[in-house]
Length: 112
Image (cartoon, one colour):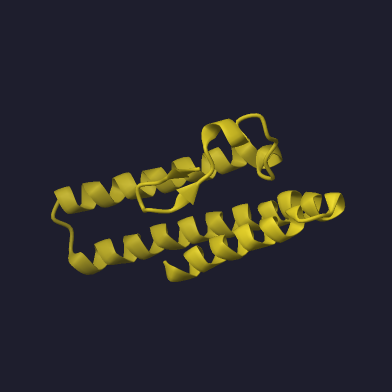
């Protein structure tokens, strides 16, 4: 496990490098979506640089935040459908670990 900038614990690259993740089938769509969000963020930088009215910037911040939240929910759904469901099929303690992992991810999303 490694610690991210935000202080969250993330799996190390070694433990997840060869795994097929739930988002794998939609990877290209996700990357396209993230590029659009990245464009929104660059737009925010441009708005600040150009001294755009505060409320207009806040409106764009809200749109960017919603886009990230929507992306996160889609990724969470894919995690539940793929990773958690796979653990349930395998049985044992792994399902409890995956449910706990998903619950913590949901808690982090709710804090934002």
